Length: 92
Image 1 (cartoon, rainbow, N blue to C red):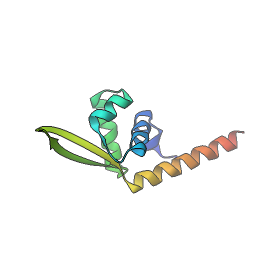
Image 2: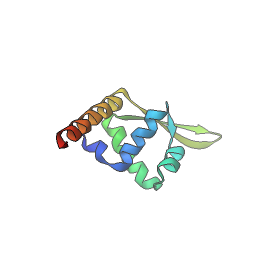
Image 3: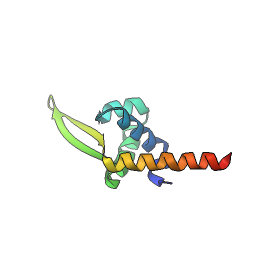
Image 4: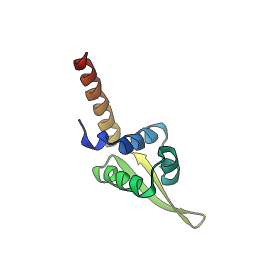
């Protein structure tokens, strides 16, 4: 099992990124309903692992950070799901 994807917040972030090409920090924070600091810490771990890319820009003179799921992150998620399916089959 991928320890990075066992966290509820990190898994929720990956799920958000699977649905969209890119997501702003603000919209992800609203969707996941967690604090800025908590989400920031979890996203930093995903970025450090190469599962998520981060792009910082300015929009109307305000900082904006957008996140995208990388191919490595997408692959890790697929493997994670397969492993979970294997555990469910074994438990039956």
